[in-house]
Length: 175
Image 1 (cartoon, rainbow, N blue to C red):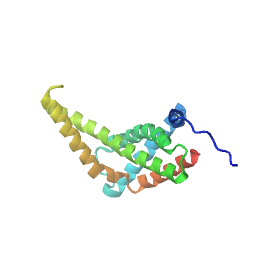
Image 2 (image 1 turned 90 degrees about the horizontal axis):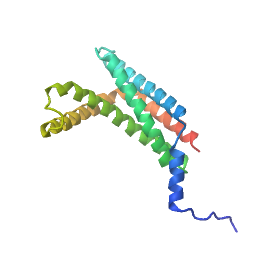
Image 3 (image 1 turned 90 degrees about the vertical axis):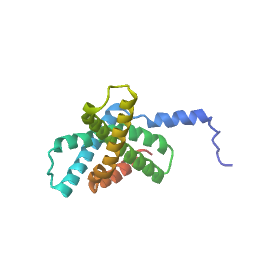
Image 4 (image 1 turned 30 degrees about the vertical axis):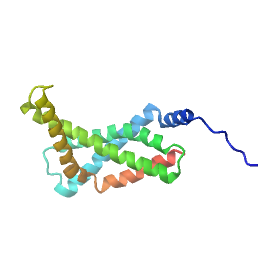
């Protein structure tokens, strides 16, 4: 008769999943810095391929893509580890691919929207008013749309390669 493990209470599995999502802080921060550098490198190559680096905002763009990658890693890797807990290698790869993709795009778009908002805030109403809230929402939404249409192209082609390599690395590392 085969050995059968007793059923684990639902709360125990959730605790294990949450515990597996935690990483040592130095490793998480080092990965975040590396991911930020990779994303700014991808954006730099994208700018070179499209515009031959002919922009007055090169440093600002590199900082934006670096910060977006840095913050995205800090959220995406623990979240990916949570979803990949005790899964097959393909599922682990998919979890990291999806979380890294979404977090990187959302974090960078958010930072772009806040920079955009900061510029236009000089023409907005005082903080906390109903008009200010509408202006804040529409300015942020239009900045996010602008980033999704124009800014995401800078991740290609190198960002996709980095994304696949990072997802494979993370999926293999989590066994």
